[in-house]
Image (cartoon, rainbow, N blue to C red; front, side, top):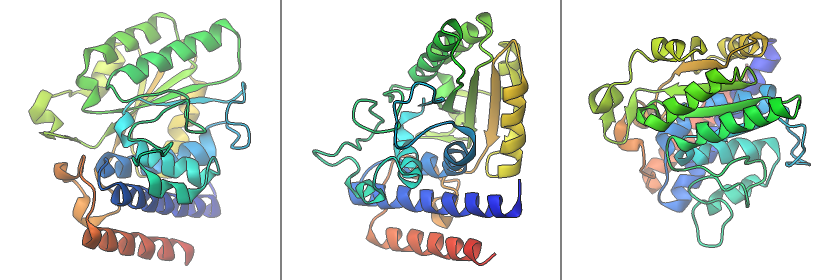
Length: 281
């Protein structure tokens, strides 16, 4: 990865985070914490990893992405807008009556969304089905799914992982956003999912753990995923919930709460400063 590529990714990640704050503040509801922890992942996927075409969102040859933790739609929407799937100005209509940008992704209304999600645990099942269909149809595309670490407390997730291993879905890559927090507190206190890496390996996945805010580690991990044959791949990202906004970082209370006017100004000022520092590099 060149210095300029990394700079571009860092700048887009700032814009994605600003989009999250813009949308949730306008809606006066939503899920900023997990959207911010996954902002770097959304950035990398839509800048470098996914084969997609904003001018043709339903292009048959595209890679598929399923946001299994559908409540973090503000982050996905911000990345799609930045990539040109729809106007960034529309982020301000999040969750409002008549808007196509509702609180969870809707594949029927949002350009670039491949699966409607929201009920936790179900998205990864859909992704596994897409990956099997692609293999049966001999289509040259890959399928990616992002799950939350609280979400993997759902039993359906592990049924889907068994399915993926059984059918040797090497065109499937799942990513776990391991920020350690869910709506009720620490995941380790609510329903301990650890050791996540060992459990994924026991279910037949090739597994890698990375810093989910490090683009170079992402680049290496996704290269490994593409190179792995005969079994699905899993990337466990260690992240910080609320990343990029000082008062939201590592705070479970920001799982599903929108910033008020004062908090909005503080968050946007911090992100504008971060963007200015990146642009000055």
